[in-house]
Amino acid sequence: MQNKQELVPIRDGYGKALLKLGEINPDVIVLDADLSTSTRSNWFAEKYPERFIDVGIAEQNMVNIAAGLSMEGKIPFATTYGVFICGRAFDQIRNTVCYSNLNVKLVGSHGGISVGPDGGSHQTIEDIALMRILPNMTVVVPCDHIQAYKATLQLAELKGPAYLRLAREPTATITSEHCEFQIGKADIMTEGNDIVIIFAGTIGAEVIKAVPLLHQKNIYPTVINMHTIKPIDKDVLIKYARKFGKIITIEEHLKAGGLGSAVAEFLAENAPTKMRMFAIDDRFGESGQPDVLLDAFGLSAEKICQRVEKFLYEG
Amino acid sequence: MERSEIITKLQKKAISIRYEIIKMIGKAGSGHPGGSLSSADIGVALFFYQMRYQADNPKWEKRDRFILSKGHAAPLLYALLAQANFFDKKHLSTFRQYKSILQGHPASYLTPGVEVSTGSLGQGLSIAVGIALAGKMDKKSYNVYTLHGDGELDEGQIWESAMFASHKKLDNLCAIIDRNHLQIDGVTEVVMALEPLVQKWQAFGWHTIAIDGHNIGQIISAFDEFLTIKDKPTVIIAKTVKGKGVSFMENKAKWHGKAPKGELLKKALKELSTKKD
Ligand SMILES: Cc1ncc(C[n+]2csc(CCOP(=O)(O)OP(=O)(O)O)c2C)c(N)n1
Ligand SMILES: [Mg+2]
Image 1 (cartoon, rainbow over the protein chains, first blue to last red):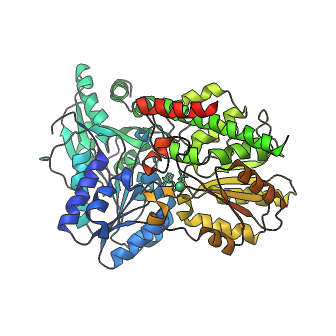
Image 2 (cartoon, rainbow over the protein chains, first blue to last red; image 1 turned 135 degrees about the vertical axis):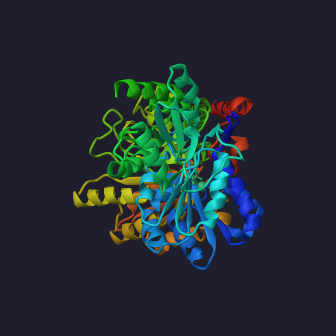
């Protein structure tokens, strides 16, 4: 794990992986709903126009076209903003894609409040909840462009419905090409003895930034990147819950139904553990610069540091 | 007032609205100029010719209702609402900032005069249908206006509500389509062909009026005509130019959702201010 502070939007990793898939897997088809320049699916569109489909602004149609394509052996990646693919096309995803267990990859860019000035209408903070409650679904939330690249390649190999969450803002690269990545297997980013912090997504950049701040306060956390929300890495959860007895989860998502909620559901039955969920509590996002919003929602490195300290000493 | 005088006044207003749109987006550093500018003349005619409302009483029962279904044209809506005195103009410079009453896309819980939150395309017509239907049930005299992008017509829900509106003979409903021929990924006819668009709406049972969406005379005549139509909803298909009024933005998909910066911002404001006087 290295900390090269190069800011790259995670969707670039997705765009690059699609180009690679275009080259190595003729069954891969990419769909978009009039946002290809935003999601980076346009890179694939330029190189492989015959395997790219722009459905226009019609997310429901897109998901079921992808369903049909998958039934004939294609591997469709249906791409648009997370808020529209998970929200607008939810019934198509539930009743067609998941119920029939079809090999459709759903990709939602612009996850979380770090979308920024576009405001609450465009910041999906419920997508992980909506996708992970569905039977047969796999949910992957990579932390940077390198991990997004690897996740995309692996999803093409995995049979069945999957949701890949991406983000808009350029963020720090917190993994490297050499890091191992496997869907369903959490990454231990740093080991410390005081508390365990579990995150998913590009908020990992803030968490990693918070680590030296915590060290200054003599707090040494173990940091876990739970990039796969479903199936969640149960072994890692049990092991670290038992070892520390205190867990913090951090995500750019509603508290209800997100990463923290997934962790809590499992641990409540298997290894009850004191927890704090740093997430968005029963409200919508709003307009603002990404860094301003992260701070206002208590998710900047500084706020994370303060909140971890508080939990550790005050409970 | 003479008709020609009305038209001249509205044309002047449209230029200052365009100026405010660019100023707002320039200050915010992000936002959607293309579709705000293409709809500016329609917006001005709606707010300063056609609709009845009381700015100091935004929930006045008898007001005409307006739904900005293409919510990304929020800068246009905010410039119009400020011009109409729904709120102080000073808010325009807070557009898209944290804690502003002017969100990136219209948020009814924060902005006086915004009937309902929009931003997810394709939903506004159904909402307007509900409002129009309630008006009929309660024998109210208000009319309901919606503004849509042409790309937005790709959404299936538009056609579900179109079918419903004519089925229920909602003649208190007037939809306006900003036919600028562009969506984000390019030309509508390349991404998802819409033509023959007038015939599609006719087949769905609507009274159709096709106009030049930058010709104020034609816009207000279309509104006059809408008021005479009985037992059918009306759709105005307004041919426009995306980015209208700022030379380097006109007909360019890339100015859909991008703020002009530095010299370009100055150039845009200068072009508009010379037209102003
Ligand atoms: C349901 C939904 N899907 C996608 C988007 C993203 N989006 C915002 S504007 C836009 C293009 C709109 O084109 P058009 O309707 O022609 O608007 P205009 O040209 O008038 O700006 C898209 C795809 C959205 N806001 N809502
Ligand atoms: Mg358009």
